[in-house]
Image (cartoon, rainbow, N blue to C red; front, top):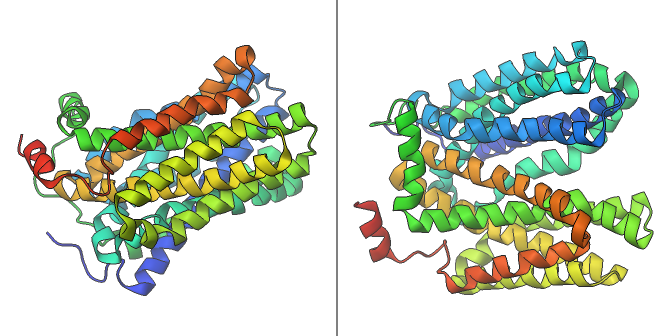
Length: 403
């Protein structure tokens, strides 16, 4: 079955998809910020704050693979609508929770809803990337980041100022439900059921993970995605503490540094896809070296110009690598099923984010936070000895797929 025209090659449909991704990103960003604000209003300890944050990530990781298979069985539209409405309803129950630890269960349940949205949008964009062109591979992630990084934080502060953290759950729930009105216009372009889709079962999930063993190129791409998200999370989570506590920056200066990094990341996602597509292996190598130089600068110097330079270069480098991984996911999805690959992508990315935050929490007490940037340098340099995921060797890929 072929998708219904027009696809994302149509300008209006592409604009509607970008709007849908941005609205989805705003909802996720609002929820993340308000979870912390609400837990603090309940006088949560640092440990309880960490558990609440971890519960949402755990839910996302647990549901990513099953959602990838469900997209193949039922299509992304039904899954997106179900996850959005269920999460929106669960948010309305949170004002009834009066103790931080009691937040863990509803937070876990809301985390289980998130892949219904993320995997659905990922699968549609991967399927349509051949039509819109790989130069736009970063547009979907960039649209999400605009919502999460640029629009959600000030909106969350506005809601909290008007309604308090507890009262903010009502508009957050509505913002989760609102995109459901737009979703049918966009997500219908993906088949409602993929031919040969395997029913969800524990054995099928095991085979889903087995794809990583059978497809080394896909495994390398997931590993790169893991490292990109781990480095991004470590920077965004700990750079404020490093600059404020170690070097006496003001909160405003630290926030400006974080915002500049986010803008550089978004610029790379939207603007550098064509450059990477035309440069081949050289663009991949340049992206890795850019990240390595940026991480070394962030890990070795406390001088403001070098920290600013490192933050901007890291945003550009990670954004460029994100374009590479998304393009490679789309090619694997054309062979193995976009829903399945989207599920693996949502597993690898948040898994890396969790690893990045845990790295600082566990090792920061012993070695300090800033030197931990240096641990990422050999990880990125290690990919220099591997072929670019954008340009796999055709004969090798053919042998792997035929197994």
